[in-house]
Structure formats: C-alpha cells, structure tokens
Image 1: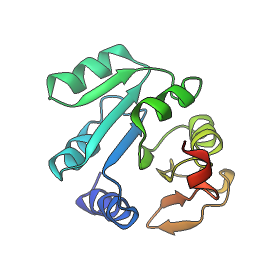
Image 2: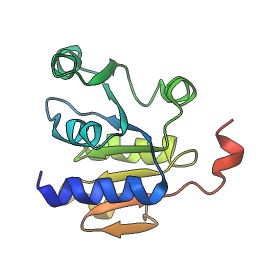
Image 3: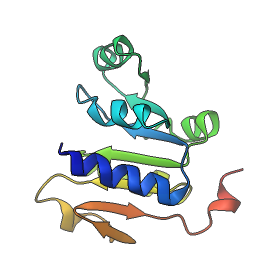
Length: 142
C-alpha cells in the first residue's frame, strides 16, 4: 500500500458520496480499513478468516466473519453500503465480487498484478483501481 493507494480509494469514495463502505477479504492487511475509518467513513470488513476478524477488532475496526459471496444479499441488506472495495483479491474472488455486488452498488478493486485482463471491463480505471458502477442502482437497492 502506498499513501497514493489510500488517496485514490478516498477520492473514489468522496466522488461517489460514500459514507458507508465495505472491504471484502481484508485478511491481516488492515491499513485501508484503518485509513478510511480515520477519514470519517463507516467501514465494515467482511472476511472468512476469524483470526483476521479478531485482529481487526483489536484495533477497534468493525469486521464480520462471513462468506462475502454466498452471503452478499444479507450483507447488502443489513449494512447498505455506498461502496464495496477489495485490495488485491485473487481472480476468482474479484470476478465474483463484480458479478454479485456491482449490479447493486459501486465496486472498486485493485486487482492482483497480471490478473487485470481477466476481469470484466471496468467503467473507470485510475492507477490500477478498477471502478464498476451499477446500471440500475436505485431500483436494485431496496
């Protein structure tokens, strides 16, 4: 992570008017969640590994143990995010995030190097951050 990475993510959130964001698959890399929280955003981590969730909680960050893909509808309904993001997710997870979340809420990903070309074409690319915008957001976020 570079300060520029956090700055780009914060800029994306600001441009979208996001106040509530979800990070999918944070693992032990809690720097993005921490930076966004310190910037005043409400941030929720969604992670399969309970020990990574506990690590987040010890830093005062909010995270839940869940499968972000199979539990997507519940997560969206319960937390109503303005933005979903993931940093260097494996291709399979990145692809599923775009398929499941992007039709309903803006999604931004920083893909793993070498896997960018395999993902669906993003609406916007800014310094390797891919932004996917929902086509019918108001109709699908009820």
